[in-house]
Length: 150
Image (tube, rainbow, N blue to C red; front, side):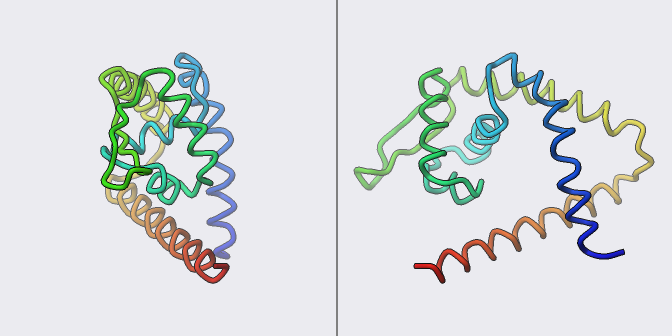
């Protein structure tokens, strides 16, 4: 099997997964990109816009717009950083509540989707590790390309 098949299968999963997850996100009027940034801040408290942009491979203006929406909903606590321009982002109590509630619903849906799979915990762990390696390699490639273009 060609390596192209791996990427084809990976990208093929994305749209159906989003179609399944979107009704859960709709309860909170969230788009997938907003949810990913909310999750990112939960997992990386005291983070910055630049750090989120790098981790999520999102342009800074797009990240800024999403953060503005999350802040307007009072789901963020924004504190000044060491640099005047830098702002440290953490989820507010309401933001954490939304995260935990939505994550519980998403986990249930993911469990339903995967319940019929014949996959061992070891196979699942190997798949997760492979996808994580691919992610890290692609992020490194993006960073190389960005530094070459400067």
